[in-house]
Structures are given as structure tokens and as C-alpha cells.
Amino acid sequence: MSKVIIREAEERDVLDCLILIKNFAKESKQPFKFDTRKTLETINNSVNNISPVKFFVAELNSEVVGFISAIVYEQLFSRDKTADELAWYVDKSHRGGTAAIRLLKAYEDWAKNNGVICINLSHIEDLTDLTKLYNRLGYRKIEATFRRDV
Image (cartoon, rainbow, N blue to C red; front, side, top):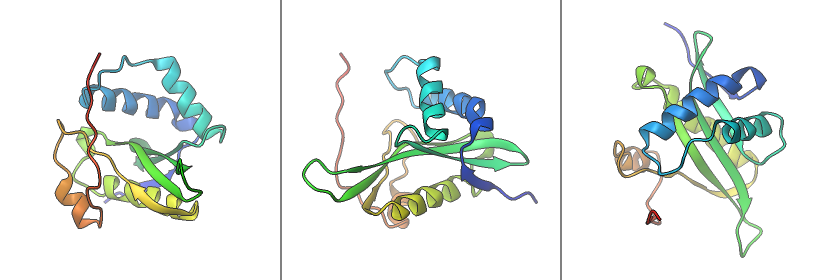
């Protein structure tokens, strides 16, 4: 049985991350036009430590099968830091294993090491309901986001 390896994304992962992000964008039915150049810029800036966005990847048998991206920032009104997950995705063919939870753990560890006082996860309503999982992992709902497409 192969073990999933979780690690920070590196230069060699850029194209794999691009494909996974494209799949995530399609599956999550976001209203945003997918921009390959912008996505590559975001990933490259992360792996080269140019931006505050961090990517972790899940690797199984030398194949990148998932990722989580996140950011740490100070509050508008406080120097206290928060971590926000920007996207968390595992390829459909590799769901049900340990990759997703292990990616989450890497995100949490990274956030704690960056001095946050809280860690946020988001959830897209049209996808599988993750509320029970989030609650079981110690997360609670604190806010709802409403969107109007224009």
C-alpha cells in the first residue's frame, strides 16, 4: 500500500497544480473565467515565495493528486493573524483516502507556525456538504457568504 506524501509545492509541481486547479474551478462551478496565465503566475509566485499564498500538494506514487492553497493575513482592525483556505481539492479518482485530511493537517500546521489565532475553511454550497466533517474536525460555522453574479 502506497503512502500519500504531503509537502510544500515546488517548481516541479506547477503544471500538476495547474491541472488540479482547472479541475477544481470546473467542478466548483465558479462564475470566474479560468485564466491559465494568471493561475501559473499565482502558483509560481507561491513556490518562489514571492506571494503570501502557500500551496501544499498530496503526492501518491510520484503523482500529485491534490492540493490545498491558503493565505495568512492580519485582520483589518488587529495585528492578530488569520489563515484562510483558498482552495482544497483532491482528484476524483483519489478521494476517500487520506490525502484530503493530510492536506488539511499541513495547512493547519503551517498556519499555527505562522502565529494565527484562527484557521478558516470555506465550503461551496453546490458541492458535497462538508459541514459534518468540518464540525468533527473542530470547526464551527461563523459566517455565510452571499454572492450575486453581475
